[in-house]
Length: 340
Ligand code: PMV
Image (cartoon, rainbow, N blue to C red; front, side, top):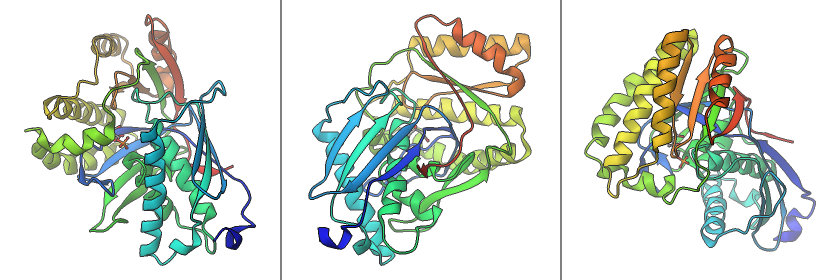
């Protein structure tokens, strides 16, 4: 097997997190990470993840943090990477191309994204791997849609990094390939900023993979699914027309509701902390008094994303820098995952 792929040299890819504006929470198929509803997000330009892969006798994984320090890999995270590779093959089989992907690869990950605090580190890692696996496939290049599917098989939200700017993850029928990304607007169409406030760097105990699987135990889940089509429409229209106020209303409504679903599922997931609530309260006050274009949103962690327009950036950064005990990342709308 190895000989057939012997000319494959090292492949490098690059990606970053994305921040959801209409959140993905809950699957219609957990094994294939097929979302129960559509979602939409903004791709960020920072922090970044790089991967290098090459052909190997057996799957191996090395991972380094932003200081270049090697992080020991848990059995669970190695199993997740192995599973992603197997699912990638399973999807490629449906388009008659699984034999073009080698049996095993060695994976080296350099991640500048702190894991498990609500900055979509797994979306960044798996979209990056999707890019690299796409390049490993012999023959014609995979389409962006197919790369998006490969990303989704590792982390549902990873499907939204295969295009730049603002990207919807949409459902289309049945089967392993039946949900993938579509670009709504590019980063050139509308540049927004995301000032990320991290009040707590402790990794969460329950990750989103486990959380998605229990979403339907919340009594609020069915209602949420009914609301999503309207919110998707409003969010997409706000992005297309650059209507910040419309974007703010619908994305805050959706973020707070997703957290109510998380809190009322069994077992209950409480990702937001006192610091999260304080930051929300203070930014609501500031944006009213200073007429700022800023919205808040939180993924699966206490981290608050303050998304704002260029004319409100200086005031939002000053607000962020005045917060005690928070780590700050300054990002803006970014481009798609790509080979490097
Ligand atoms: O892609 P996952 O399995 O890491 O789930 C992402 C879940 C949220 O970040 C909470 C929402 C989203 O749409 O990104």
